[in-house]
Image 1 (cartoon, helix red, strand yellow):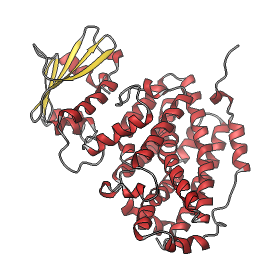
Image 2 (spheres, one colour):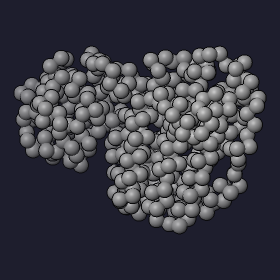
Image 3 (cartoon, helix red, strand yellow):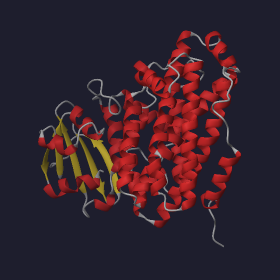
Image 4 (cartoon, rainbow, N blue to C red):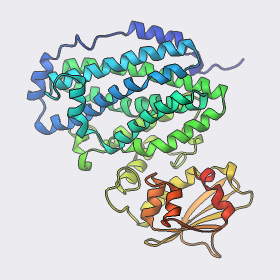
Length: 420
């Protein structure tokens, strides 16, 4: 007897029915107690930290509501279109909810949607802006290309990155500390409603991705390509101003806790969609637990290897080890030569490194290769990090001589597919 997965048992009709049963009104929430408690139970720093976090949600809800229309057009089935139409209503309702809280409780904005969004714009982090700029361009791409691989990439960005990885983890900690403190009852109740809506949206995204990748095997690679592009930005979304971890610890949790929950959520959703994280060829060491992956990502952010560039990156061996652990995870052995090959990095400001690719196995090590590598990149650590972090196009780095290859031209031609 064939085993039916939990994802297969979800139906689009049931997801729509859950929306009808779960309707709520953002305009009827009573914020009178919240306004009083906001001033009495939160000290000035806590109000600043909370507003920073809530601002990301407010802007995010408005952005996803604006960008959902092409998803509706691209969905293959009417049942999928109908559900996505309900989701657009949900996202607009969430934006109204956050706008009301900002204006009526925190005195942010002038009561209009445009005024509220303008007031919180300075709070948006570098990573947040990059992710949501990509959501804007993804919507434009989906208008031109309604293929299943493009739709799969778009769903991965919207439902798995924005909702399951970023929003769901933030919601968990917000409702957690509000419940422990027994404060902001109107905001707490609204956030719980938002959580239930997002869970339904994420369930739909997982279901649709599962169906799409079964119908078209190219969908899996389209999702992997999207994740390779966006995950470095997503990791930077929750970097607090000045790396001040009090923005988390003031409310009883660690910054790493948010990252751990986010990566665990992404892993579980990809697995349910038939695309386990360890099979996606991402710049992550394989086989790590969510906490280890969270520590890995934060270490790269702090070292200047990911996120907004604020100065030269670290160049010590231990930190370069982290970078090359990620390079190992990127290798696509389908495009590797049949014989063993070695890639080398001759850094102008650090010791050399090399990567051995041999019959499905990879190993990165410090030091030069006796006799020379098959292909060697001559550059500074900073220039290689800028290429690896997506800050500069590799082709432009070659043109500007910031990245100078020597050795096998055939192997160089394979690099876009070999290392993504």
